[in-house]
Length: 271
Image (cartoon, helix red, strand yellow):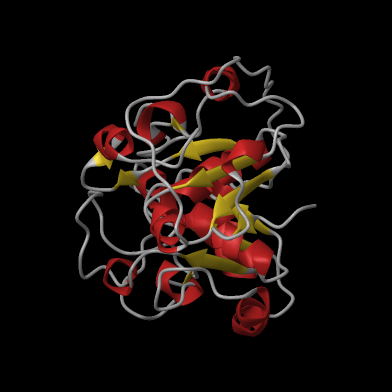
């Protein structure tokens, strides 16, 4: 299988289907930034609309229904055999959601642009303005199940018997701050592994060797990841794959976990 990331220097926009997935937690999708400047040929993908179902009991960003996701990818020009590259502003947080979903729904040939649009501009890449649509609609069909996932019960078991990584910032893991969900804290037994641990000072992913060395401390246990709503954790799964570890994603993450008041909650630094 091809690498899950690609550098700006190696990217040929003419040879791939490009997805612009710029999104911020506070602002949501950013089509205005896309319209003001994007990699030529890129199609804008709205994370909240195209890469998630509406929020509810399954969390703030539940997995989209297979046919809804397939329709969004067909509209973006994705077909079987298409090489897809997803990008966002810089660190790959939103782009990794598109990467993970395409992989989960059976499309292997997909990568995240390491460093995002920032890296593309730094490498001398040109920008286009306005909206773009593919010349031809794609023929993508979603086949769910190609990446491992966890439900709440399985996430709780993995935290107790394996390694469940919490990709949120330390203050949210410890329960000192919770700006988004109604309960603060973490799944008992989970280990805090903030997303920033996987990035260098420029917001790019560490090398596979560096990530492999960092993940050595996890040992040989089964590994999974969660975050607030399954977005940041997809980036952690990407980093784990680069480091040589297959990991499961808990898509509902903390925002689903706390919908059931009977589920236990831990706070502080203790897992």
